[in-house]
Length: 252
Image 1 (tube, one colour):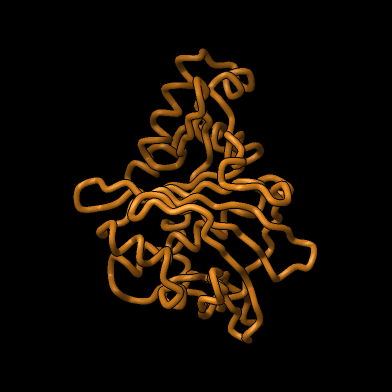
Image 2: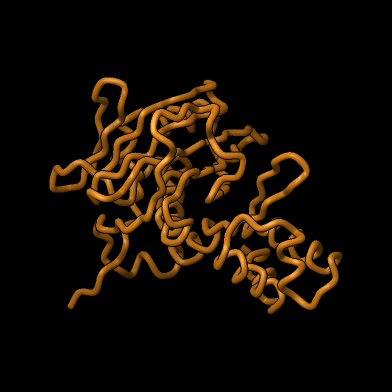
């Protein structure tokens, strides 16, 4: 946590985060043109932000794309603010983009629209099971109360029993890589996109990276939902206690 506060203490680094909030997935060259800093200066600040977990990256060919990683910020908020507030599971406003009809896993675009990384002290097997087992959803999902398998699809439901989300596995490398559709049901106009989960063991913990492709209107609004989802997953796997970081509402 000290690294997070140290990284945020510098106005140049905060400006870089603002730039990524405005438009995620920028290259070093993209960011360099936005600031009166040398290329080396931008690189130096990005390294600090990456070290604090506030920025995560995705390489495609010779390009390296940078993404704002909201998980550490959400964990700071949850530590001091969330316990003081009511936490009903009632947050859903994610604007999503359709993939081409009939597209396969090989059609996934080179560059994801949203990327998030978190580190969880657990085994690969436990993390893979949490991502694959519908019974795990009730333990950590910030919005869904439960889930079930319906044919080849995992269907998640809101507390009132309405369908919330349908996910179908399109590709799976056990313990390492899982690709699913992301079919929101809370909005009749919402369309299907693709999520890739990447698991990498690192000693006594795992690095989990979420890549979201095919967002209809970009990544606006997606970050908070994924941060709440990842915070709940991390807390549950590390403590064994169900954790549902739903959006707080006023008691008025």
